[in-house]
Image 1 (cartoon, one colour):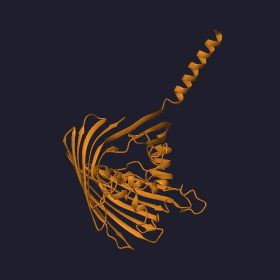
Image 2 (image 1 turned 90 degrees about the vertical axis):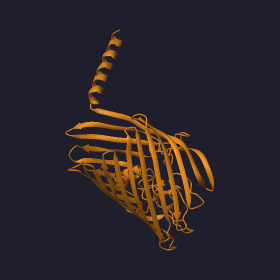
Image 3 (image 1 turned 60 degrees about the horizontal axis):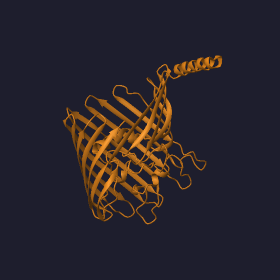
Image 4 (image 1 turned 30 degrees about the vertical axis):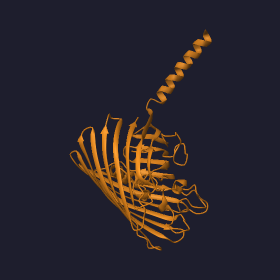
Length: 371
């Protein structure tokens, strides 16, 4: 009896200590599941009917934590996994937390400093525009669809001051063969005042996925087959030795109407001396017909130029969306993507196999649930 009483008392004491230690801490489990049906007029030469993973956004689940350290400072972390809802496999090259994994400190006055695998400033400041365009650019050439993350990275983000907010990121090469052998850095800023939000961002990847340092700032994300611009159009198919991205864009809200515009300029220099410049222009409009019905439309124009081959591919894409909001966590949407290419290019709607012609139409009916 005495032993049992002692154990109970010890347990109560330990629970009390733990309760005090973690009273100002919290860990949140969150996630998003998105899937649906898709029809395409031409994928690799055939029209297709298929199930589609992530018709809205890529499915994910994650853990987000914070601990109050006092004086306005908190320890924070995020661990986020990407997966396919159709087969349960992990995405992002099979990583357990391939979308994000970082830890750091946040202060109510001085901002936030984090270290790990993170989004760069282009994603943080310009990615929201792409979300309201309802689809990424051709092969996500400007990374606004966040197919590339920066690992080994240190990021600082300011608090918002009179509508201004800024961020800077540096991804270390972690290489003994050269400080810039697969490094990355980015800068971004935003301004919000009333109905206006405007953003600007720059990112640079030096020797991404380098043959002598493939685990630096940019790793096997860069080798994904659908990111075709990451490799030269010449027969050598050499990877880029440098990629630079600059962009600016934002929104203006008028009641239930949100108007958006985005411009990005992307420059690739390849290991075989080929050079490619890609410019993307987009306009979007999203309107809440009712609190539970959102109608969206976007136009995206992309034009490129190769220096050696003098090829000048271009793409015109129109996106139309009708989104029915069932609850705060669940919605159903019908989406239509219509693309026409020129300059000898093939149509290639983001997330699907390229057409064998210069035209491609994709329509999806999907459901999204967040938790």
